[in-house]
Length: 542
Image (cartoon, rainbow, N blue to C red):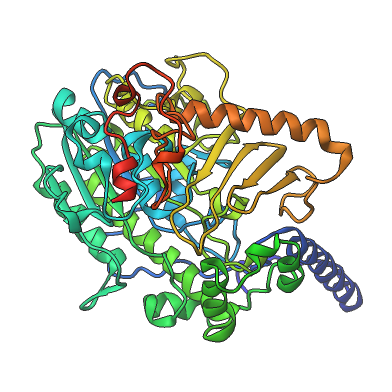
């Protein structure tokens, strides 16, 4: 055949060479299957050129990126924010997936491999995105009751408000908002709220988000910088074939996705109260992976939706290229929380295990020096950092109540702060539902300590030796000193993130509904109402 390479091998040698190749392939494949928590994947075909907005660009046709630019104007900001998207559901980490746009953004920017959320549930994580605060501070623990958006004093400390007031930005929000039913609609210059269903007529929810985002870009005032969140409802809960676009699901028809490990054995390693089928994580697992659908159906649906989201996000950025503003726009790709995908025989998120709390984070920043582009960074970045990162791109100071840090300190040639980055963080999940056990944890690269507050139960994991969190060391005397240290640090961080409010008092922002205030101590300062500005106590008990 013209153009083919010929090798001087006899048929016997050719057979032996082929046998050797496939033996090596089988060994590598088996190792990957055993070590990868999402299972062993096969390669998939190139992404389908479905529903093109404009002619697809090759990498060579992309707008040239400036070498070590010094920009003297505020950046535009676009945040792509799919729902329930785990950190390793990317083409660069799961070989079965093809996400060329996300991969391209990672090559042109930075991918943060250990990014996490501080509370793994939709509306609380969104409150953290806009406020730059742990839920202990923004206190929006109840669905449709956003203290951070309802109270003017709180809203003025969010990045959308600061951008509008001090930066002259045109700010838009597209897609999932979760607070519109209570009337919080007029806080953005442009908004198109929709969520909860996968199809709007003939348009998938991801395409509707794409259409609305492009409309924002086309209609925006061209003499003002802009910021937009594109909060895409899928892939949340995608498990039935009708949840996805048929052309994308067809790509997985002949692919078998082996299961990650023995799920029933993993289930027995969990605390007994997490094994209860009445919990949301178990009931949703049974629906998606046992009773109604199986592992193959659910995972093929979910992964095909991710591919389609990748394409829709690419088409939004195609419009950015068309307008000639790519090198004036920061692009952030991340999510509100992770997804178990049947690991631990669980579904969805909520718990402080790695699959639940770690989410993707890719940042393209035109200010980024050339040597940083295309790199991986394993710093413990958090969703609480995004607010200050957005404001930093606008050249504005963070709100005084924000609790994160500008992530650009990890890649700019002249960072705003040279202080070492955090080496641990506090995770919290308040008591909001009887079917979701509350928890808190301290997380480091190598260790994690968890307290299940309602059940008086603790867990300790060595994440280096036990990345899937199978072996609880909390009761091992060998680690008693370490556990004591982590427990004390956890308590310290708990008070730190809730300040000026005080855990365990009437000002505790995470008090569950029905709490008897008469049994709680008052704030330990002279004027309790100052300790609890806009206190969430009445909110949670109302």
